[in-house]
Amino acid sequence: MTGRNKLKARLRAGETVAAAWFELGSPEVAELLVYSGWDVLVIDCEHGAAGLEAGLNLLRAVEGAGGEAVIRVPDASEATLKRALDRGARSIMVPMVHTAAQAREIASYCLYAPRGRRGYAAPIVRATNWGTMPDYGATAHEELLLMAQVEHVDTVDEVAEIAAVEGIDMAFVGPNDFAASMGLLEQTEHPQVRAKIGEAEKAALEGGLLLGTITGVAGPGRGYAELREAGYRFIVGPNDVHLLGGAARAAKAQAAEALGEAAAEAAPTTSY
Image (cartoon, rainbow, N blue to C red):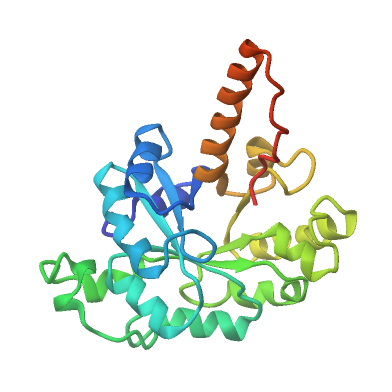
């Protein structure tokens, strides 16, 4: 590795990395999170306020504050992945990767020939600092951290084959959609859901994949320490919506108590 992707280097060195979701799409909020200690942010272009183009521009805010960013792209299309890579995303999370065939296609879109079929425009894109990195074409595959989201029960039987796909580095387990695919929406603690996720975890680890997931809704005793013990190396915890909302509710409750007002009903603060 050239050392450009510090997150990948940290994970490969065996570190367990805690990250935060970035949903609101504000560069000021991105800087605030990084300066507050969340040095890895997942810029969510699937469910967050920022679309792909805005999300890619937010890379500058995260990196400028000294942080590292993962882009969760909105889809797995060739055009989306090519654009994310050319604009400088080195760590990419792809949602809804259900089959090994799909994983192979995704990897091929992200790797230059002969490993894949990524379109070449290296001399004119931000990823090469506008053409000032002559070794980029030869080393881009080393610096890419590609996360495939495993979030469907049918994918469990595909994980071992996904692990064999060159270019796929991590299985990122999405417990909410996983539970929904079993007809158990929002029942992430259900024994059947936990058992199937356990199968996916085992297959990923045996296949040499890094494991990632969220904290907060993955079942009892599935906090940072427990997830690390289970083999996870990338754990995404709070998001900016809940951090801001939780602080706002707490401040309002404090004011209401002091003034004898009725406190607002608390909203859930778990991650998604």
